[in-house]
Length: 358
Image (cartoon, rainbow, N blue to C red):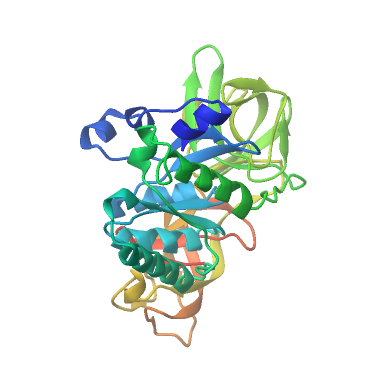
């Protein structure tokens, strides 16, 4: 996408090996963390998160998808939907991604039009199964390889332009919670020599200005600090607002005082909790969930925003066990406090397998 769009609208494309930043990722030829790539269309500037397709890295899919306005589901026309295709659609549903566009890749390898039609039908059925509008979802047929090679035909660059058009038109302008109290889930923390500690993440709601006081909430005791700088795409700004991917410089805060999974927030606007009640749906075996029931004091991982925390589940008095496919109200006690408020969505997993979703 970045390669084709940079020709037409400007911007910079990245090579695959630049996207996979850490050496162990390159060595195995797979993406372990979520990588950010930017590209532009005539109407919008996109920050694209590359999500891994490997089941064992689904954990990163959860932390990355938590901040998406839409998703591009890439599916091979030659192979059709794979087990991880189903899992990615399900995860998108779990973490609140409302809009999916499908790119049917490797169409240059399929000569049979009927086979292409069949794959498209399978993908639409799969989307509908997980409550996405399968019949109305844009499906773009093309070949990423041809597009990268500069092929200007229907399956090459033209397909990428159709994909960009679908992004602009199918995914609505995000409704940014700009008027809310400032909140930023911490994704990463690093030190910049001579400047201090920088926290990166996407502003979930509100506005943050240089000089404002904020709280660091969750996992450990609440800390107060002051914002001394806001950066986006290596530019210094006066403020960051809902929807922006920013780096925030904190006064007098040590690198070890902040960690992924905490939030930066307007003072007093959100509190950390270890106890909460929730309504959950437990995925069935067919949906990639558990094969067996779970009982009182079940201890899975709870995924909130950018982190996971172990918690103990207390079932209602009249419920001895919970079967795959059940809906149930539970009480949870986490081993560490998390910044939360009513209505917060989360996912439950155990040993890398999806368990259930709020």
